[in-house]
Length: 89
Image (cartoon, rainbow, N blue to C red; front, side):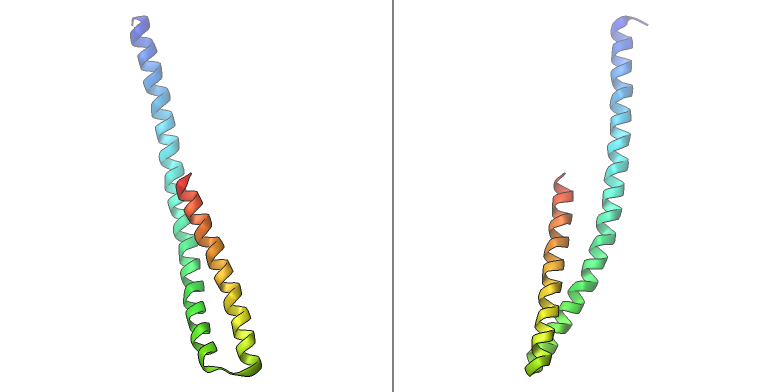
């Protein structure tokens, strides 16, 4: 094998290894993001339910529901932001 062929062969092997590694990382990221997405969907459903309750509740119960809803809003913002950042990487 000539030096050029050997160099090209080595470069192709290195690229294949890099490609395989990136493919695996992308697959793992997709699985991780999917799991996180499902958790956030559950939080989203709870938030919608709590907002509906807050709309009909009064007094102390309303403030407690608002505090819980605000916490869920922050959790969702953080979670969606993490997924968005992970997808950018």
